[in-house]
Amino acid sequence: MSGADPTRRAVLARSAAAAGAVVGAGCSSPFGSGGDADVFTRWLPSPSALRSTDHYRFDYYDLGTLAAQRAHLGGDPTVFERTWEPLGLAWDDATAVVTVDSVDVVTAEFDRDAAVSDLQAAGYERAGEYEGHVRYRNGETGTVFALADGTILVSAVDRYGTTSADPTSRIETVIDAATGDVDRYAEDNEDMGTLVEELGRATLVGGRTMDEPESGAARSGRFENLVAEGARSVVDGTTVEEKWVYLYDRPRDVDTAALEAYVAANDDSSEGVDARFGAVEDISYTTEGRKGIITGTRDAGEYYA
Image 1 (cartoon, rainbow, N blue to C red):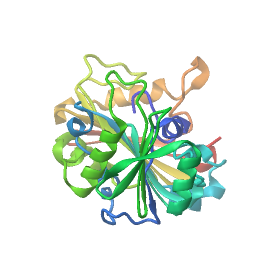
Image 2: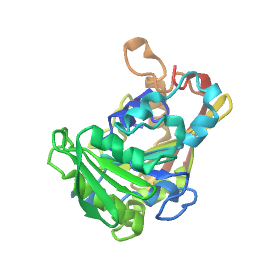
Image 3: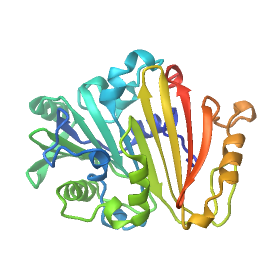
């Protein structure tokens, strides 16, 4: 993926820096159990509903699988614990995280009363309700949590955005997407729908739609006529199966040669760049309709090295 590799530490750092989290008891959600990609797509509102834009990025992390595969990962992904601070929740008590632009959605085993106590101790005060969710806001940071039985949502002020966005409004929009009260990204946008259908559910999944780049560049992964990109990782024992999906405007725009040049330009960190393909083996390239697909495998022991 251009500028990021969701199978490595960069995507974990993004999760730690994300503005908020939603935590529900166990693997279930008050908005339905979800199957396959629906486990994350149901949380994704259309971009225009979320923040009056055409695109944003999402990421999904199956923490239950990561916990089960912990012995093979070459380290502990404790970065997730910073996602839902100040809650006293260990990462391996959580089952999943979905980042929705600047809001996170997390399912986990947690105690609601303890979560409220954690928030109050950190300076949060009650600030109204929405759809059965009681809000708590930190007056100093602007961060907002919303709690219901088995559910916690949180979003912070986006200090790096080009326009200001109210964390409370973003939380409400994510809830509305989960309940079906606003259009969802994958249903409202054909490109996102095609992308997530190909990616499906995996240990890690990420993607976004985009405006078509004005020009291509092999090292950056910016390809002409590209309209969406995504990636998935499946952790299984000592092996991670990788897939990168590049969606073009038309089938005739798919450029396998450009994908090969992209991999070749990013398979060696000797020039001071992140070698996102440096540890990937058995790389292959396929095309299907508007999609250009790269697949490969890597050693799970290097995941958090």
